[in-house]
Image (cartoon, rainbow, N blue to C red; front, side, top):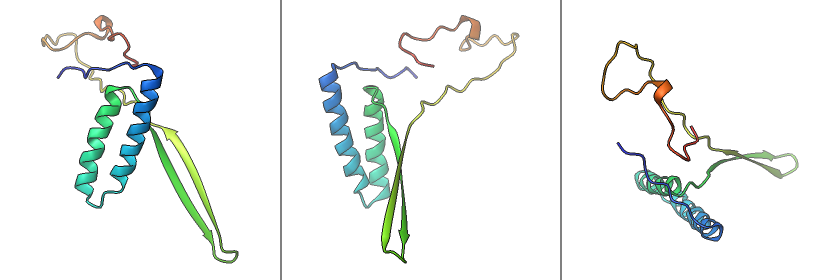
Length: 113
């Protein structure tokens, strides 16, 4: 499977794209059907990856004090960490064509792994 293409945009266009993706995320969250929401999110995340849009996970905790009638919201964000590649240790005696010795491997330009 080939690596997906990464696109580079000027700063203004990148900001506009991120705004539109945030709007799309809100639309995904409004879906009543879980399968529909999941499909929409999958497309949205693929697009975000193609344009190297950084993502954050937002956690909202609500606490309600009945004695005072006060509601407190705690909002935390955490940046999604890119997944690390899964590596497999193999013996030097293995001569499979699709294996590359780690010492011979060079990351593609722009690869952050």
